[in-house]
Amino acid sequence: MIEHRKGISIAVLLIVAPPLVTLIATAHQMIGTGGDGLIRARAVTASAPPATQAPASAPAASGAPGATPGATPGATPGTAPGTAPAPTAAAAPPKPPAPVPGRSALDFSASRPAWETFLRDADPAAGKQLAANGKPAAGVQACVACHGQAGITPSGGIFPNLAGLSSEYLAKQLADFRSGARVQPLMNTVARALSEQEIGQVAAYYGTLAGPPMHVGEFGGDAARKLDVQGDGARALPACANCHGLRGMGEGPLIPRLAGQSREYFTDQMNAFRSGSRQNDDVGVMRAFSQRLTDAEIQALAAYYAGPAPQQR
Image (spheres, one colour):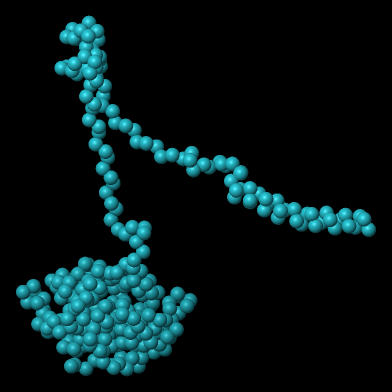
């Protein structure tokens, strides 16, 4: 019995001892009786920059030719004996480093794109006049010449329909044309001839135009419908509807509506993404997705989103 109790006591001691030792060691360190350790904050001191000293002039040797008897070594001529020489002017302190452009590490405010200011207080009525008349003094033709009277291109082709697109998306695209982030010679010339205020006005005007009802999905077959609704996980292709809305009817201010765009324009833009000649997509997603599609799938999607040919208005 005694040996049994002794075994139990030893077992309890082995269980309790390690946590107790750890607790005592922790308290020892927290109280500060454990010493400074290997790293001491007070041992790390900033080194002072070396002082800039003026070169000391050699003292005149006693008895040298031209030396004045009784003169203090190092004294400036004309200084009375026993008088300390005038202190040398201290070197100018080094200039502080120039600030690095950009946001500081403490700036947690949201970054806003510059084109947002174009839309601030933008007048859609002024944009309508500009779209109808252009800016002849700057060589800018009327927007309606290519994009139709109500933002619907009557003949299709490579000119996009602007009706149904958000003012935010249009302002961003015009800003990209203006900066060269998106390259199309005609639109680069037009956007650079417009002021920031005029870009905001045109974008605000076209943003008020609702796209006409479209019978999307009548063409393109099952391949296009599957890409729109399901995508293709094996090729890392999400459903087109995830971003552009079901049947391309639009989703979010910066995601363009695809419904009603002509087959020619859709194909032209997809090929531009594939080749890299258009690079203003967000983090390159369209460039990546377009390269995973076959030519036949791009043609099928173009027919799927185009629907019936637009009627001239």
